[in-house]
Image (tube, rainbow, N blue to C red; front, side, top):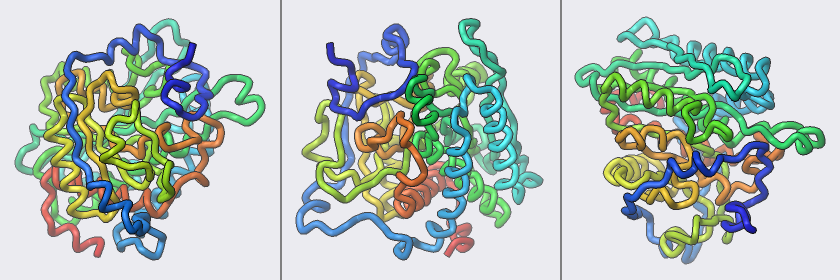
Length: 385
């Protein structure tokens, strides 16, 4: 019998753990709304001209982000096994991330109540694991602090089968999801610089690094973003938008480099993997359209927006699902992971696989989306141009 990976024509998944059926069923919803926001394929495929940048094409802001992104991804990729199954590596990872967030937001830590805190919890008894940590940098809003924009990425890496680890080592998880973590930390740094310059967000912004996104924790109570979103809901917090940068580094202008789940949207999207996706589950269409518009207004990288039912394979396959299930508008921002990236959940997910100029451009575009959602004044742009 074919598994989901084979059925969808995806690259081999070398993960040791898979999501249990009982957990997967939690992601099913009767809401079935589908909508797309795309650039017409004819505009990007006929008389084709490359849409992907080189280092020489980057704007000053994009170029300034590139070394920071490279440093974070490279450091995390050296910590193979950055998950609770490897306590020493896990502790090294969380300590490094906390220190990096402190360093990158130091210019704002003494201003406007900016704080870096941690949410600790323990996993279910069936897992022998250390205390698990979500890391948060919180930037209070100046005029509407009760309205919260969350940018959150998971920092844990997939655990590979024992026989794969023995032959090739564990997954460096450079793209999935060191790229998302690097982008989130970069946004925290830009927020700190904005506050230092007097351009404070009107809404509160939280940058959160989540534990335990990968199986066997995915879609369970032990998932870091589930614990975080549940805590937000119990406090009745008003999260107006949640964005999760998830696997951001793979791009190609070549035809037939892009797969799509069940072929949905193929006629609108095309077959070239040269775009960034903004994907929300049913009910997140307004946030998707607002985010796509903000991205296009500031970034030359092509983007695709889609509102998809939870039953579509991989549509809910990241931390945005945890917030969506609590009624918060949320999006996954991604290069589409296994539908484009052949090193997904494999030992070959290394920094060398990443298209660095496109990744830097995507990160700058996401920053402009956060600026729009959090209502950060335009004056801060003079810092980067």
